[in-house]
Image (cartoon, rainbow, N blue to C red; front, side):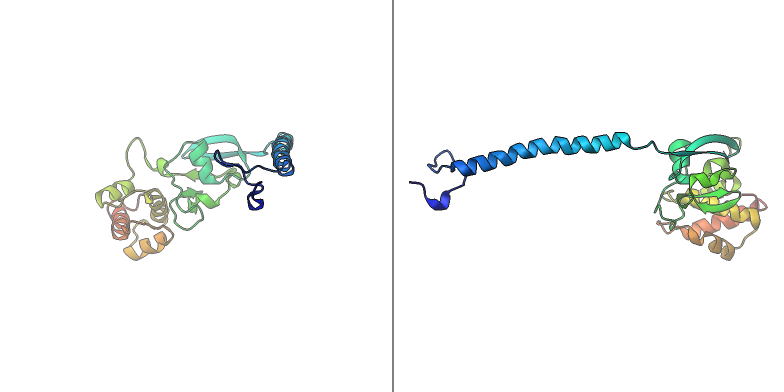
Length: 213
């Protein structure tokens, strides 16, 4: 006779214990029910996905680095997504992606803005300049050259945002002193802590180039 305490256990190869007929049917029925319900649930979810309306878009026109673009953007795209993923302008970096580090800074109508917090649809009719737009005829801008000369970039990840903010500064203040540079760049974080070299580069760019960024 089977030990009552062993009832319901799955027998091993050397065990004489047997499942009761009721337990066997109960376990078998649960397995069949699971395999039957799962496809039905997945099928319903798939049907809902197929019935979902397509994502809507908005037609915009903007100028990026002097080139006019007419395109349809999804309403949830940010400006940095548009630049990197759809215009292949990957010089603009995504750092914190929440308007804190400044790595994604670009110029919009001449003003420095965090592109991670600007929607692409807001750019309709606007002028956008990215770090790629600083190079003219294959030559670095005076500010870019000053960054090279003063070792203003270490890992380089924050450098595009630093350059764009500094470009806006030099356009409005051709010969900034160190205090003015520090104030302007307060929203741009350098995780390598290369701040002294960055400030020196911007001051020198203004000094030797008459403020031309």
